[in-house]
Image 1 (cartoon, rainbow, N blue to C red):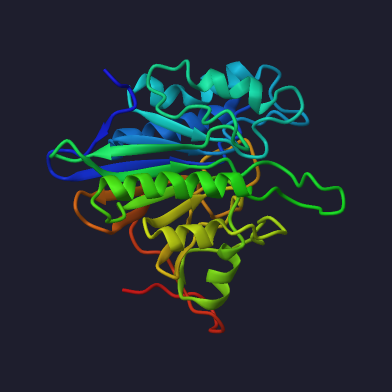
Image 2 (image 1 turned 90 degrees about the horizontal axis):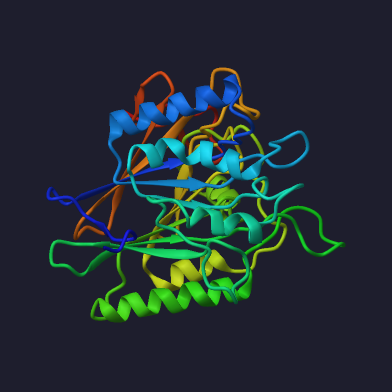
Amino acid sequence: MDKRKLTFREDGTFTIAQFTDIHWVDGSEADQRTRSLMELVIREEAPDLVIFTGDVIYSGGKGCNDPFQALRDAVATAENAKIPWALVFGNHDTEGNITREQLAPAVETYEFAVSDSGPANLSGFGNFVLEVEGHSGQTAAALYGLDSGEYSPLSHIKGYNWFRRDQISWFLQQSARLTEQNKGEPLPALAFFHIPLPEYNQVWETQTCYGHKQENVCCPPLNSGMFAAFVEAGDVMGTFCGHDHVNDYWGELHGVRLSYGRATGYNTYGREGFPRGSRLIRLREGERSFETWLRLDDGTVVLEQPEHVPGVGKAKIVE
């Protein structure tokens, strides 16, 4: 049996729980609160897949002493619930005492992990595509995971890394392969990574968005064209990232919905009055669309987020 095999339910739905910025360190009280939140989400939402979008552990500075144990603890909620899960790395997962090359193979050892280290000749670790099977037995949707890297490799450019051209080429190859299999029609697809694309700034500044922007978009200083590839390929309907803990908005740009998750971890910075939580995403077989909502740490479900119109005063809730 292929443990990577994912399928739509009998009712035609496929639900994903996004956990982001867990920052697991050592099992302290803050980490246990994070675990309780993840258990709540899994219990109440019964997702078909969990995707961790980076900074699953915190290995830098005064972070975890044992990254492998921290990873084991961080993913235990999904693993113990026997729910398939996938992981893309963030900038804090492999700092200090661990490298991606060391940590990535550990992910593959878990029984319910469906992501892997990805092609060996590709920039980053954990670039993957998951196929969701429909009732006909054919692939009906695709889920891309991409390693958005850590920090700029160029000394004269400060800030975060950017998607490399080989990653963009790989995505386009996978997209073309799946489109060809689907008789020339792009599949409904989603993409998951940690660091937001520069277009997350653009969508907030130019389009009506829904949710909160309470810190700067900490995107790469260079735009290497990954978003353009998503638009050109025609399959990716939505992207989901983390990284900026007190941003949770989404907005549509050129036919793609750019979405933040809701920060899940307590062992890191947040904002008073902005509860931790999870973003849920639901696909429906045969439909080129998806639903998304938030589940917060007190159990509250947020179906509608505040509307932000560029150039217009304070955000308001749209009924």
